[in-house]
Image (cartoon, rainbow, N blue to C red; front, side):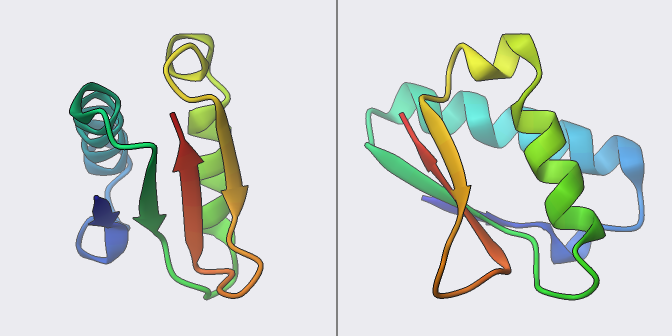
Length: 79
């Protein structure tokens, strides 16, 4: 399961809504992992995603989140 944030990266509200919807769906799916594609770029979107994932209500759902060592434009979530 994955979500690509390239289409919403310019709108803060859309980023948060997309992330919230995706994390809730991914956690409920029963899959052990999911990925968020934020792109390499300057790393601002990746930093925003990682900050979002540290929020207490989201951290309860996600056991771990890390930038893929082979592709810094991808964040892998573990449930």
